[in-house]
Length: 310
Length: 279
Image 1: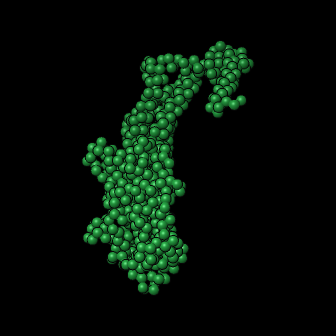
Image 2: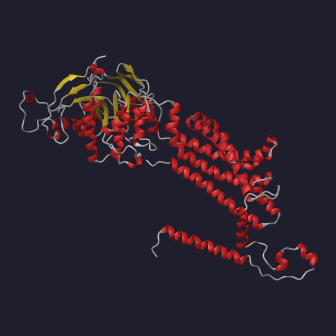
Image 3: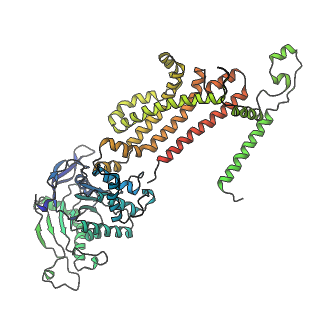
């Protein structure tokens, strides 16, 4: 196993029986590999099958064809090594904050003493900034705090990979910002591998190392992988002022608004290789490579750098 | 008047109560004409004909009778003269045994039905046919097979309280939120632990609602069942006092049945609140 292929999606296909007989293909023959410690966001329109891909990674759904290999092992059902943060937080309302996190900890380390399980839970409750709210029940928490509990629960079992399905979409803009900061801080500190679905382009640019663009369904494909050219130490306060920011943003928006619809034609043309999804670093002009930063945002020139290792 | 709603409701309750008591009191005074009749014949007639008073007891009669019962609820002067407390204890005991047997049967079977769509479909016809049967219709069959009137009345309580609990448990278990089950799946929680830590707490409010419906039905049915089987119990007491033509005792018993039923219902309502958590 190469370090580049910590998680390897290998030719997965999902089909559903269509209402009038026959089948509907949501997506077909998807290939993608994720590196250890990498933050990957997936962006695409509703109905392209993003959530299905995530559920397959979680083991909650099975592909009609193909397989997913995580750390050298094919996924066969859900595993405690892959934590899921649900869009609707999915906390157990009859348990306290501590109870919810301990539930996960005790599922992973059932032989630990109660005190050790609580210690582990407390560590992650502190990490997400919920110290003092341990004995509250989910109903007493705000939406942002609930999602923090969800994050603490996922992190407390020290998973190999964290899968997040639009974790912040139900939150207000301010709370979302703070939580994005927290998640980014925690992931950078712990080197957590993350696969996240989002609809928010700025969120993807702020959080992700690589952004996977998915074309519209049915018959959706991973159309392109955008490598985030912004520096790793970017800050929420000024990442949108970076000279490369608009290049990336425009490229993604352009894809979502126009290219995602017509991408199917490109695939039909036969030139598209599903096994080697093109990797782009938009907004990186030759001038930057020569280390002379331009005063105005550069045109989103496309530089096809390499292809994903298949 | 700007009194809080609770106080206003209480005033209205008391007003209605007083009005009803007054109307009852006046209606049972009775001052009808008294016919002159032969003393031998008068012995065969009721008080209405001979003295002009109503045969229906007034609220004061019932009140003093109630007080008499409450002062000495547990006396025992032989089979046909036991304190009302003893009779109620017999009834509550039968309801408790039949009800808890029903809980023990309905919750596991309800779990099975709720978790397995196959079992749900397979058992549905039986439930649909058995559920609408009046529990008293089972009584002859129970007496014939069990050959014990006490056990038969317990069986009748069992059979009447089992259905609401069974149906509610199956529904509650089948309706557990998918995302909670997914939490358990992603944490690799085993089936037994999942049943006790996810499904049971999630379905508990629905199960307890079923249990609350059942205890109400059981308390309704025990009175009728005891009228049939006789011997002991508040239902037998009511029927016995009817045979004694003691309407005062019948009304007293009716009141006590109502109060006990309310207490049973409130206990279950409290328990339901204990296991219900808002999200």
